[in-house]
Image (tube, rainbow, N blue to C red; front, side, top):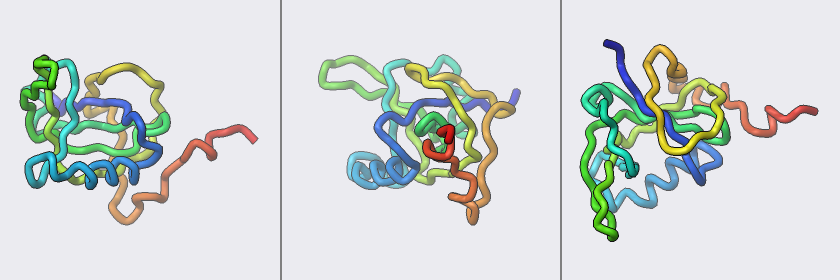
Amino acid sequence: MGELNIIKLCVGADSVEDLTDWHRAHAHVWAPGTTEHVTRMWPERGDEITGAGSLYWIIEGQVLARQRILRLEERRGADGIARCALVLDTEVIRTEAAPRRPFQGWRYLDAADAPRDLPKGRALDDFVGPAARMPK
C-alpha cells in the first residue's frame, strides 16, 4: 500500500509565508519541533498517515506546501469535545503548484495524486499566484 496523505485548505493564509509566520507566532503552544492542526474529525485511516504521510496545504486555490504528519493526538476544547490534533513536523516543504477547488474539512490524498516537492533552491520559482491566473 502506498503512502497516504491528507489535503486541507489553509484558511486565512495568502501565501506559504503566512503559514510559516503563523507557526512561528504559535510555537510556544506546541511541543518543541512540532506544530499542530486541530480538526473535528479523527481520520479512520490514521495508522496509514502517521509517520510517512503529510498534510498538504491548499493556499489561494493551489496546493503549495506540505508538512509531515508525525502522529495524531486527542485534544479537548473548552467545550469538552474531543478533537484530533495532527501533530506535524515544523518543516514546511514547498510543492509544485497544483490547482484545487475549495472544500470543507480535509480529504485523503494518495501519494500518486500528490504534487512533487520543489527542490529547496527553487522554492519560489514555480509559484503561480492569483494575479498570474487572472485573464488579461
